[in-house]
Length: 480
Ligand code: ADP
Ligand code: MG
Ligand code: ZN
Image 1 (cartoon, protein in one colour):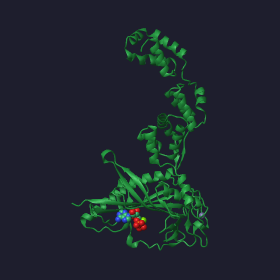
Image 2 (cartoon, helix red, strand yellow; image 1 turned 30 degrees about the horizontal axis):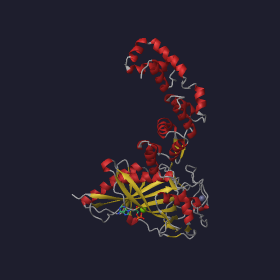
Image 3 (cartoon, protein in one colour; image 1 turned 90 degrees about the horizontal axis):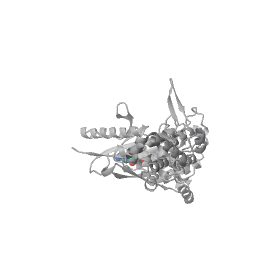
Image 4 (cartoon, helix red, strand yellow; image 1 turned 90 degrees about the vertical axis):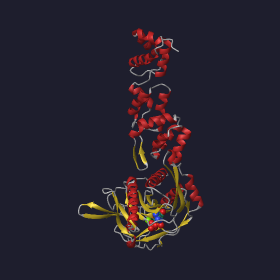
């Protein structure tokens, strides 16, 4: 029986994080009243002229450099002509044969242990274009066209057909989103449609070089669904091969209820877009100096961050993954370490306490305390002023208040007892009260250490400095 190898190429549309649209000054804010963010240009009224958004260009360059693309010094906008209700101009301004970025790459770390391998994915091109509007069908008996999204700047990133499994496609999408979010070019929000993917899938008999006929899977709005759709599509194509049915080049959608892909339109029906250079915009020229200026502000890539956390900060790969789950969390952690916190202790405390109170929205995050407050709090534990357990209590009272950790300690009366004389008095009292146990401990029954620590802790309401307390007990009972 012939075995087949899947061949996959991905096209990702990502919204650039500009405040205003690509060719007019309308807001790009999501969720506004339909058609409240429009003007003659993005409504496509005759005679309205596009003016290119400088910030969109900068972000497109940034996105390209973040995946090692070459940035073209001269690129060109083109009209892609088609009719659809959400496209009032009858064409979309895009880039065709001269995209702003090309020839990038993204290496994927796949598998684990002996099965680990690197998949090298070539990025063919990354071009700028404007988004279309949105048809809303959830308004009772009416459908409306909302043009708020019309003219929002996008970059489309197109890979070579280098991926070989659904898992690789999923990993590529997660990595690319991660890179874009950390580079602050896209908010990675799949639910709001600001990061969307089309997957091209074909199969070929193992050992055969020539690619098979590809099917394009469109409009799939979660990474999990993309992977499921690719797996189902590969299976369908294998079935076609076995039964001798011809695989036709077409666009298919995903039905999650049935777990199958279904035909949306065949390539025979697909239109010729009649691309031609956009006459209302001059060629886009960027200087090498501009490109280098953008490169100079590129942040560390999330993957490099993770390996740096592991190799030079000594935290686990798991923790590094958690801390780089969002750029603002990574920045918070790094700020705490830069201000003197121990990396491991900061990492542990953030994971155990802080993260459950963090809310993220796109590239923004609300963290309930500042790095300085965290550093101060960890410092109090470090110096023995408060115990680890008390630190949690202090954090709970401190979050969201902006107060200093010391002020909260004083307010809660949580000062850890580090007065050696006072501790000594308490330990003496417990020894006097438990002469039998004291004798046994003195005689070598070290398990009783915990008993005395516990008794003294009870006396101090849990506030005794544990290290100091241990020392006092040992000293008074002459244990070495
Ligand atoms: P189009 O402009 O019609 O979308 P492209 O040639 O630009 O076509 O290809 C789009 C995507 O399809 C690219 O990501 C590319 O890697 C992928 N692709 C091309 N041929 C195949 C194939 N035979 N199997 C799987 N993917 C393919
Ligand atoms: Mg395509
Ligand atoms: Zn507008």
